Image (cartoon, rainbow, N blue to C red; front, side, top):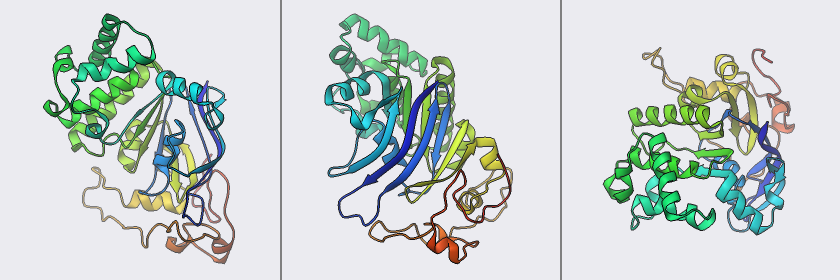
Amino acid sequence: MTVLSIEDLRLELPGASRPVLAGVDLEVRQGQTVALVGESGSGKSLTSRSVLRLLPPGARAGGAVRVAGEDVLAMPPARLRELRSRQVSMVFQDPRAAINPMLRVGAFLTESLRANLGESKAGARARAVEMLEAVGLTDRVLRQHPHQLSGGMLQRVMIAAALLAGPALLLADEPTTALDVSTQAEIVALLADLRERFGTGLLFVTHDLGLAAAIADHVYVMYAGRIVEHGTAETVFAAPRHPYTSALLEATPSLAQPDRRLHAIPGRPPDLRAELTGCAFAPRCTRATDECHTTVPVGQVACHHPGGTHA
């Protein structure tokens, strides 16, 4: 069953000379983990936030973002609030910025259950304890303030909060960016375990291809507001066809080859103030030809000169 279907999503911002999202197509199925990867500024976070219609002021969106068949972009405010409180939850990059520092963790966790889902005080507390145990924390945390917890513990609290209402879809927007490497691994393993236990669909946004490879079933690679390649994680990472995907992998450290030289991607991502013609990656691509600078490539691998072959 498909829990999220994004079709031809376009997003324009005031002052930008081109769309920041230009025809994004993406799907997440029940119990599946989908990774959305790419450099900073590629449009990953905006894509994930569009699922909750958390768009910047003045943004104009087109296309469709369907959760369980309903278009989020066309929802009236009351239905949108219900979607945010029951069906879709998000785990943000920095847990310290997402939790009120004046509230104890218990108040933070039970507030939405009582206000949005009508839970009793005792019922909300019991559900909060259940979710804390699911993420490896005890009820002692309920009595603590955010500043008394480590970054990893706070991110676990955020994941518990996101799962309280039993959502069908969990959005994880760079959830390990502010954490050390060992804690990152713990959070990724935790998300994978929770996905299996609760059958939740997971959209995992990251610039870290190593994390994406560790957690994802399917991978979408994004560049300049477009999906340039997608496929199973095994296929994309083992045999990348788009030159941008290959370049990202060449720039990723590997424990299996610790002495391998990393290759930086030349140039910079395109400026939003500049209009684009042809393939957005062409100015940085070693395979580019005249066609690449004039014609926009389309397809599962959006490249005029893809390498290798895979289904």
